[in-house]
Amino acid sequence: MMEQNKQSNKTIQIYLNGQWVTANGAMTVAALILSQTTYNTRTSVTGMQRFAVCGMGACQECRVSVNGRPHQLACQVWCETGMVIETGGAK
Ligand code: FES
Image (tube, rainbow, N blue to C red):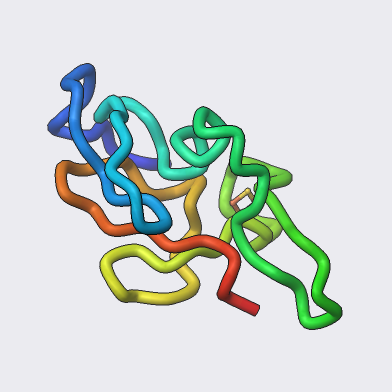
């Protein structure tokens, strides 16, 4: 089970795919990506776009790069101030 984020309910800024976006500390990275209508977390080995399916860390479809670390599960990571997220590249 995920622990509550210490920054919950604060408005924060996150760098998502080269743009600063507003988030809430109570959001997971997957929720942030969904709120930006970017329905793509990674690209499959066959070139298909993927997005979060299970929301509980099982399917691995939500893998993104967080602060330069690839293959982080967006559904299991809380948004934090200044976080740098890149989607689409993890295969
Ligand atoms: S949505 Fe399934 S592991 Fe994140």
